[in-house]
Amino acid sequence: MKARRILITQATLVLLGLLLLKFVFRNSDSFLGRVSSYIFSNNNVELVCSGVDPKSVDVIWNTEEGQSKIIESGNKIASVGYEYGPNRFLISLSDSITFKVGNWKTNRWNSHDYRIEIIKDDNGYKVNFLANGVNFDRTELHYNSSGEYDGAYRSYFENGNLSVQATYADGRPNGTKTFYSENGKIRATNEYLNGEANGVFINYGPDGKLNSKRNIGMEKKSTIHSDQRHLAAHWHHALFTYIYLKEKRAAPVRKTLGASNQWHTK
View 1: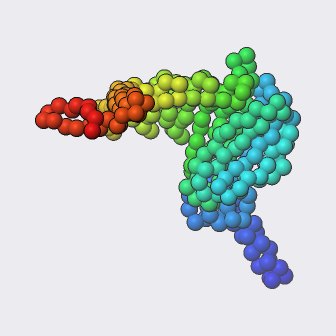
View 2: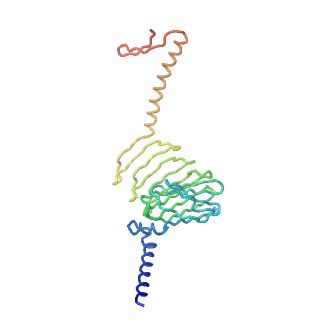
View 3: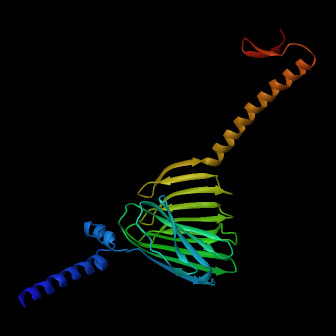
């Protein structure tokens, strides 16, 4: 009888320990959190659709180690594993439109509760992505009917403050892209035009004061003008060479006389 009580007590302690690992330490960035991830498949994925038939949705989990389908026709068929680095979710609809969302994991053991919300309206598609855990990520993206970023893009910190805010048109950033610190202060602003860096790039210090400022648009114009001058000089020399050769005369050479450059023949 005594041995039986001891056995029951030990089994109860083991069960309590497993429950603690499963539910208390599953998202813990600690040794017990690592043990929990090795014993259990703690990553959860939830798919929510509005204006979209869930049966038309497939989701592939993609990492640098490979990829596997985790949702087929709206039904979960496999679990999300633990991989370091970019963890992407490729969302495919039956009409061949694909969306990409995901987060960056800094280790191979922290678990996350993933939520993918797909909304369709007259303006196109909106995807809300949430990775709740140590490597938190919350992003709102808008897509057009071709599956390209189109419209507002917003990313948030865990405290609810904006992390990044931008506007896209046909898959390319267009307008001001603003980066924020976790305390809500602006960290940097970049200007884009049709996907190209353009205009003024501004960086701010932790106190919100101006740190640096660059006019990318003017730098690009200066580079273009410099390239144009070099190209003009090249074609100028080529033209004279062609004329002299056509007249069966020696090709021109540039000779420096004092401070002036003159063209002559040998």
